[in-house]
Length: 287
Image (cartoon, rainbow, N blue to C red):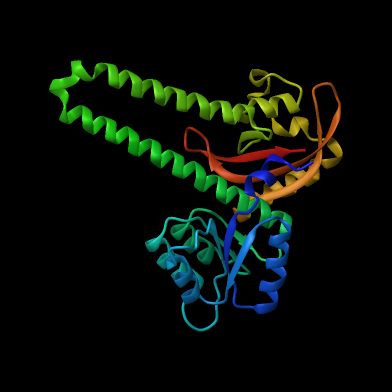
């Protein structure tokens, strides 16, 4: 049975920028096996031209950094973002901090080292697309809210007459907010926000149900409490790699439910911040 993520990402169109022909052929084939539509170009100039095409409709750019002669990947990314707001996931063999930091200042959708494997690449692409979708929804909500406040300031003298309309707008915003939380809670995947020391800070209803607990019971517990002892090393290794490389991780292990039942799960993780601005990480649990 296909997971929610597989269905959600099916048919997403990727602009793949890679100058090495053999690598491009192999990676394109693997991406297509994950139901992505892949358009490959071999230079930064061609990438920019592809984005300028009004009919391109790309959902994400997978960008190498070293592209031979001409425009490199970071420059191409900057030019693309001047044209269109689109998630750019850098995919390179470089691991130098200065290179990674430079890409973070251009696009905040991730940096993945080549040869990480199609499973990790697929997870990174899905995270980037989800992050972009969330950003777009937030921006749209902010635009709507700013528009509402502007109208209030301009027509302050008509406040009484507009009171019914304002209540309607407020009600719609509350409904939208409620729908967002419903989607988060009822999503078929478990979502967690975990503190740097492993404490669970946020959870959706699905994650709590998967682990056999209520959401209040799950909060403030440690994620490692649910990892099978034999798989603890796997968990700690990927958590260490996540914090050191700042690259999203994806791995499989066994979790232990409250009733001691073991379940095979795939965990996809990426760095984030908690409500106080402290370092944390997001965890997606899928079976």
